[in-house]
Each structure stands twice: as structure tokens, then as C-alpha cells.
View 1: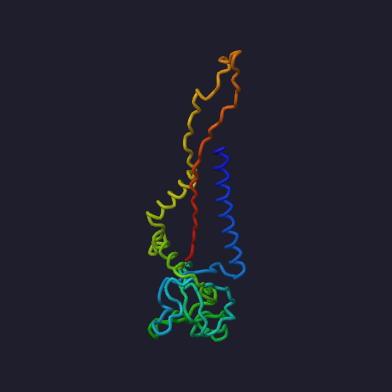
View 2: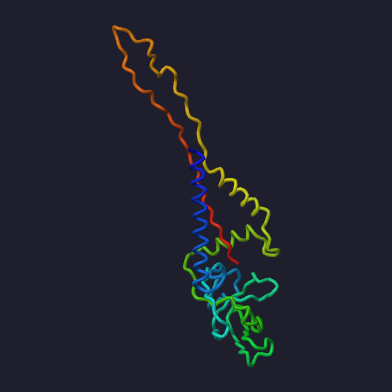
Length: 232
């Protein structure tokens, strides 16, 4: 029985994980980008006078062909081709068409600027192939993005991109807990005095025999819920 319950629990956990992967894949497909939801980790788009994207903002991105971008739009792009996971969210200030772009002949290009950055601190020109998507809106859930950033900073080293030691230990602990989520308490034995003795019946008095009550094991189930999030 215990093995069946453990297998059922592992099956449900696997089902939840597969469901989450399917939902995430559906969101990526619907928004036409591999990074549909991101967390803002710097203040370059948050000037004191008009903060558009404060640190911890959970933003939704939609994929866009480079030919459809316009000056003034907020976009997400890869600033370093050697590190494709390093993403920047800035506002477009210049767009080059394939006919007037000398840096990347034959394709669109753009220059961006962070609203809070000093004048002249621009990014680009960047090729249209580096475009990840256009900013759509911010998900209005307070503190969720900040919590994701805190968890990510705890689990990973931003300088190396590798998991931290404590992050590895947490993952190992969760795996161990997943396979040990059910604990059974030992049951009590039924006293022998509770079982009637058929040999002690007499003619003067006949004892009515009743079936002995079975005392089952009481189980305590410990459930663990893990949500993994992999935002850049």
C-alpha cells in the first residue's frame, strides 16, 4: 500500500511538472518568443521623474520582426552575441533600414537608450537579428518579480552564470525530500487478551464470539511543492 501511495505521489508531481512545461511552451508559442516573461534586474528604465520599469518588474514580451520596430518602442535584445542569455531592455532611439545601414548591410539595425542612463550612453547599433521582442505590459503582481530575483541571486552567480554551492544543496535537499515525503508511524499490536478463547466455553454459560477489531497503521503524509522558475 505504501509503495502504491508513493508511486501515486511521484506520478502527480511529474504530472504537475509536465503541465507547467506545456503551459510555458504554449505561452512562448502564442507570443512568438523564447523569452515571453522576464524580470527587470536593473534601473536603466527607471528615471526618478518617470519610472517606466522599476527593478523587479515582471514584463511580458512579444516577438517582432525587425522590420516592424519603431522609434520610441521599448524592446528586449541581446547586446552580446557571445552571451545570448544576457538581455537588455531599452527604448529605441534610431532605426536603420537595410538600405541606409552601413554597420549591418542588408538588414535592419537599431540604437537604444535607457531612460535613466546619461545622454550619449547608447547601445548600438545592434543588428535586427539580436531582437528578442517588444515590451507589451507589466504583470501587476506586487513583489513577485523581486522574489524571483532574490531566489535567482541565491541560486546562481551572475558573474559566472553557474549555480552557487547553496543552490546545489537546496536542489539536492528537495530531491531527497521528494522521495521521502511519506512517513508511516508504527502501529500497535493487538493485545492477546482481546481475543476470546474458544476452549473456555461451558454448558452453563456460552460465550458469544465477536471478531477482533484490527488496528491499522496511521500514516502522516508530508507534501512538497516545488516550483522552478528559469527567467533570465
